[in-house]
Image 1 (cartoon, rainbow, N blue to C red):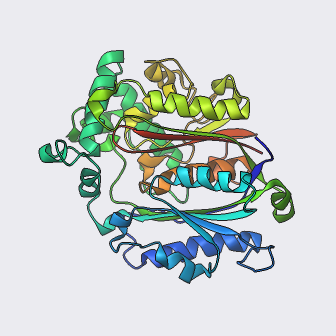
Image 2 (image 1 turned 90 degrees about the vertical axis):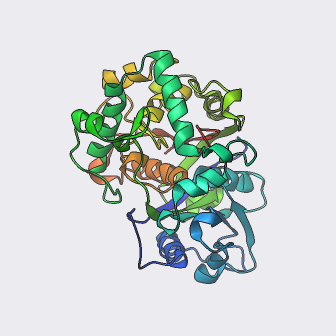
Length: 385
């Protein structure tokens, strides 16, 4: 990587089932003003301020088309380079880093926001399916996940108890996270007794819906980052990969797109053994089985060994590689926002500012974002302090 990109500030809202009193513009304003306040950066004409803005969101969730139009108004971002990512927030971090590495800008303000409470999540995801064949039978991201979960657990013998352990771990970790929505003291038995959502996925094994919230990050070139803060966190590698949209064209028991994205990020960062390299991982898992499957794609274990990994205790707090110390998506995060918030959580950990959820001595971390049916789009970002 020519030069380095530093994360100089992060901010996030409290994630709640419904932020009925906050307009989308207020969500953006509150989180961007907080992150700008941490650095003292504003939008100036003399080259000392923020050079560009970049947002990740889904207009269909926001209600009015072009909800992003509020950002410039509420934060004063006029006459600046302005970009948009209609995907998961991790892609905004990826794109922002490339903007800086290109040499065209030195500082980028990123924001990702979503009010899932504005409209039915399943309806929006149904619109994302093929309109000729898949929409006609009602296929959406939940039913696609059900197909993937069935294929994965059947092919590799993943047990319901192993998936339930992911939920228990996530909620336990979330109890130490003031931003998390769900942090109840749930047990494996509670999970297994919960209502079936889409066989074999139970209600407790899916991320809560709806969830409202936002996240913001400021990226800077290495020279600028060192002037802005004495605790920059460096992006050392990133990679992304799209898989085939048609579910029947890929083996849903494996996640080749994630494997490819991870390999690209690890090659850039010079990482050969991710399980021993990282001190923590923040993974985007909308469903419990995905933490196990994504762990395989990220190289933490071999194919089909995600269940053994959770059984080993290595991914617990205090284990070799804590996964989702924040509680993850299963504790309540909006789609689209989740990937950027994964990066923000890694930054907080690497700066030693995670409070009760802190992983002692954390030096290197990996953040993961996902989008599309059954993990069609995968993004991996590695960071270190």
